[in-house]
Image 1 (tube, one colour):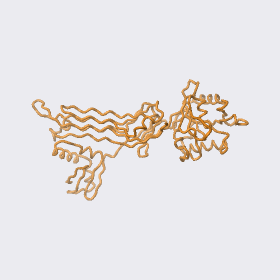
Image 2: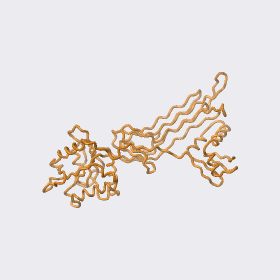
Image 3: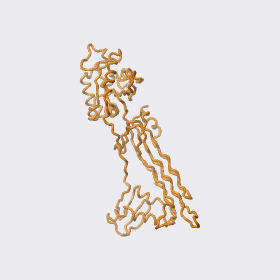
Image 4: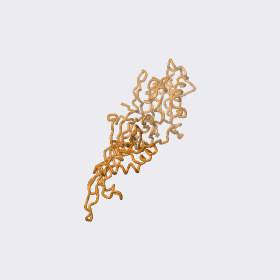
Length: 399
């Protein structure tokens, strides 16, 4: 089963909790609690050997490993193992329908989520203000993203045409592909890949399912087919002269229009027009290359034409490696009936502390006072006696 689109829920590993412990050093008791290890990150790795996402379709929820806990005697927790998700070349990453990455280079990586930070043990929390902390941080919880991966197949050449134009038969003639063929529409329901036979060049050819009028708007398999042209260097328009509804010129015009309507950049891709089924014509069409996949007439001429054109440095229209780093809002403040409700990752990290209760509350208050939250709440018009809400913690505001 060919899978070129998939939705996944991916999560970083949680940070391990820090430790509270004390050791006797030089006849003095000093903090010695180790810090938790960072959780594993979520990373995409491009593997040119993959053709689709079928290897991950059975598991739609993937998680990196958590970091290990800190221990006494300054022992830090182990790092969580990264989650490596292998994807084929031409993978696009969408989050909330926005493109974040377009992955082209083999063995390149893209970090979707950084591993959550481990909590600091009381040794790392030593300060002039608190030289003997009895607290530790619990480590940041795992982060989760809902993503959609869409693949556009990499091929040197793509064969497109109306249904039943003979595309699958042609790719069998040109390559080692075992494409399914038959005398009915939409025989090909997924792309077929092959490598051009009997040449020193390694030229990959892709046979795409048939296009019909309205394909650019989603009619038939249109948009699922057209997306695969973004990573091709050369297009063969395969024309069926026996089609009773569309003559040769109408087929060429329809194919060209559907491509441009889907993506106007497609008009810059190199193209060749090939008339198939020449064995059924009374006379060849002198305007275009004529072939017959039944009698093999013109097949070698087509191969020669391909090899000649590929002596030029044909390039992809989307060849740049495109990545946008993910950024999240760290915090949000909502004013509601005399309350200032603070939420977000920064807030959760601020209060994610354990240990002696008085020490924990004092540490949270100090962190709040030093944070941007305090300044913004003041700018929002907070008055003495208003309530500040940090997660599940509430306290009165005082200027």
